[in-house]
Length: 103
Image (cartoon, rainbow, N blue to C red; front, side, top):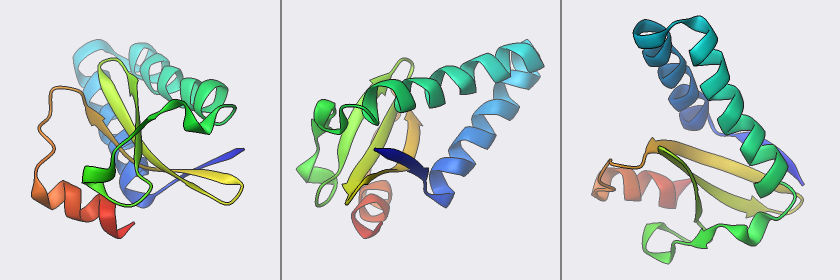
């Protein structure tokens, strides 16, 4: 399956890159973002049902951990649409749940 990123997931990756770049440098930032996108491509795109079903977050939302982050995605026809990539320590609260349910 092909991977697509929602605008929010793309923004999550951009913020992550900036954060890692400020704290550890450009090389580490690129490695971290590459590790996340590579894992999504290698594992989730190849085996889209590998993620845990998250009915409490919305219809057809699944999650897959890429430590220290968690990717939230949907399977839509022949695509995996990544809707958010959030830090694993972050609480999933109602505004995020509402956003995921709407995507």
